[in-house]
Image 1 (cartoon, rainbow, N blue to C red):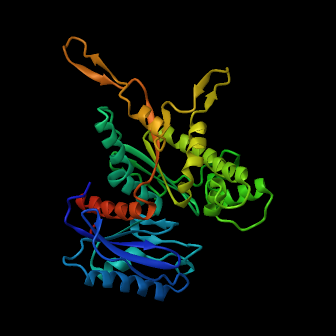
Image 2: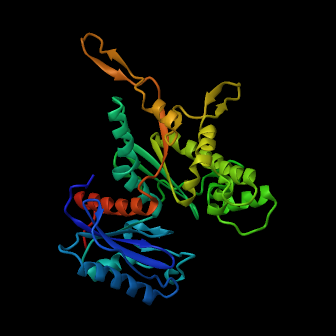
Image 3: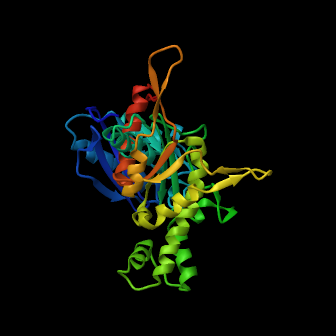
Length: 370
C-alpha cells in the first residue's frame, strides 16, 4: 500500500528479553536493527532502554521519521497507548501510558497494537493477499480477494483480521482475537490449548508415552525421520493441532470470508498441519431435522499444495447477461478460500504491518500529538 512512500517510521520488536529497534521506509528496513535489554521487571530501566534505542536509530537516519509504530503484548488500551498488567512484563503492573510517554519524549505520533493485528495488516498489504491476487491475475482469473484472516501458531494462538485494507481493531482492541475461541476437543477449553507450542508438546508426550521436554522443532524432525522418536505420534500431534486450528478458522471465516494466512514457528510443520486443517474445514453441520450443510459456504484449498493451488486459481466463473442489455458480468459460481503459509515471516510481517498502520492512521488524520 505504501511501497512508494518516502516517509520513515521507527519500529520495535518488543520481546520479553530484548527490544529490537529499526526503521522502515518504502516497505523496506533502512537501518541495521539495534538490540537492547528489555528490563521487563524494572520500569525505569525498561523506559530508558526504549528511549535509548529509538534515539540511536534516529541518529542513523538521513531524514526525520513521521511516527513510531510497534507491537506490544496485551492486555492493553491500544487506542490510548496504555499497556496493562503483563505476565512477562511485571514492570507494567497497574498500567503504563507508554504511547503518551514516547510521544512526549520524541514529539512523534506513537501507534501501538498487538502482534496478531499487525501480522495480519502486513500480510494483507505486502504479503499473502497481494501474492494470491497476483497469482489469480497471472492465471487469467478475474476474481480478487480483499479480506484476510491471519493466525499465528507459536507460544500462543494469535489472530488478526483485515477487511478491504482496514485493520479490524474493535471497540475494545480485541478485534480478530482467536485464542479465546472454543476448543473443538473440549469447548470448555480455549482454542489456544490445542493450537500452540504447548499443545504440540503435550499431544506428543501423551501419544508417545514420554515425559521428555521436547520442542516442536524436534517433534517435526521426528516426524521427518531425521531424529529418533515416535514418528507416528509426532505426525499425529501436528495433525491434532491442525484440526483444532481448523475448527476456529472455520468459525471465523463464516464472518470474515477471505484468504487465510498462517505464521509462527510451528507453521514450518505445515505439511502435516494444513491437510488436517482443510479436512476440518470440509466438514458438515446439520439441523435438528437432519438437513446437512457444508461447514463453510466456500471450498477451502491448501495453497501450499501445487494441485490444490491450480484448482484454486482456475477460472470457473461464467458470463451472465444483464437483462435488456448486450453486456455481461462475470458470475463467480464457485466460492473459494485458500490457506497459505506466510512467505514474509512473522517478524517481518509484523514490522511491515506496524509501518503501514502508522501511515494509514496519519493519512486519515486519526492521530495527532496532544
